[in-house]
Length: 406
Image 1 (cartoon, one colour):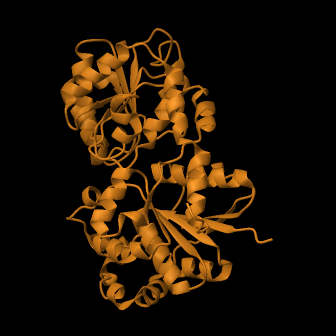
Image 2 (cartoon, helix red, strand yellow):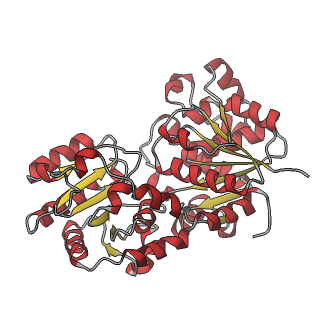
């Protein structure tokens, strides 16, 4: 009896949202014990590598030299090859494109039944590789954000080719996953694809694993007698995500400054990114430095979220914010911007948490204050998180990966 061979392709397994989702899917597939599973990485690095389940093979492709990369790129269909930048921008070539010859070789030699990938250049490189390799491999791609908003018109180098490559190559995928109905609509409009070609699958959350990690202690200095999470300390608002313009943490800092002027409270933002200097400067100008911490990315944010008085999402846009589901799974009340797209779907118009307008720091401050004052019903919030179970999402992914009727 043939045991299906499934491969999942990523650059690495750093502490990112896409990486966490792919690893959750890997865990869900591994539990079925009915598949050969490969995690195919450009580079075997990142703390999440240690969390790959036993029995799952890790394949590290590495990046080839330009002498091997460019011949492979130029073998692509003419309309793609002619649009690629010259070797002068070689250093800016996406990692997924730099490993193209090795990904082609992997597909030719291993001939997996299906290849799943996420992130735009990974999606495109996987489709390029499948076209060059031939063979039976189905390619299923995942779109995690709204391309009409997320792709900058001022992009440079290879990134300026994204719109053309997405419109040319996404239609060649055997399955296309959008992480929310809003992303599905936006992607259909952006690419001209028929909406029926795109399947909306909310990001899965391993509820049991989140719960187990949430019960672990926070960092020793945070839980010590004078720590922020010690008994009797002022309530802490927690946010999790990259320090990046999309997350609009400047609005969160301004909202917190309003809140902190009226009541004792503290703010922890878990994440790292290029906005750190600007956010630290803003916190100083608002006079809240002593009540705000930016510890960077942590391997277990759930321990912090479980102990928080409220979880805040201040994003200007999202695809489907996993962190909201994870906060609910921790039993933590949530306040989110009503950004496109995902929060409204997830919170069902405000039934499971507060929704406020994007960029409105006054409304965000009011919602956070009201949430801190409201009775906490963690069990109810955890029941809502259960709607995004890992098993349900894996079943839907398998329908696409194996070409089964939905």
